Amino acid sequence: MRFLVVEDDENKRRSILDFLNAHYADEEVVWSASLVTGLREAKRVSPDLVILDMTLPNYDASGPDPDGRMHAFGGKEFLRQMARMSGTSKVIVVTQFESFGEAPNVTGLNDLDADLKLKFPDHYIGAVYYHASINEWQKNLETMIEGLELK
Image 1 (cartoon, rainbow, N blue to C red):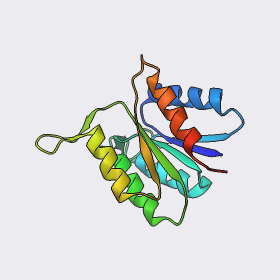
Image 2: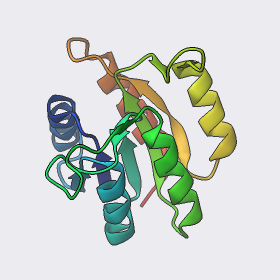
Image 3: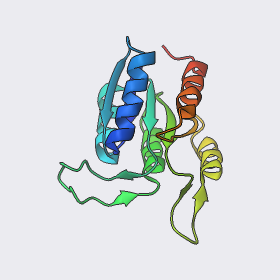
């Protein structure tokens, strides 16, 4: 199985990579830190599974637009672009936010999850709520990964 992690927060990315290395040590894992580089990596490596943050910058901090604005729904844009590609990659969102957007257009994680399942049924698997000091996210992520029939 080939994993792509698209995550801009260094601590969260390290936690996810450590989890993958501990549970899927024989699998290939690549990562990127923004919407644009994540899409490039998805095209380049054709991952079986993308572990995707929802709130992403356009570009990496060291890229052409280091002050690139954050997209509250960058992960949704990633999914939209993936749906246009002719791939079979599956996507699990791992986020540390329980709501997205700004008032009056705030979307809760459960509503976002339902919307993504409806709009991207061929790619989107589900969402995992990440909390740095609680390991429940690891169990939830492992359950989702093990439920996939990839390879």
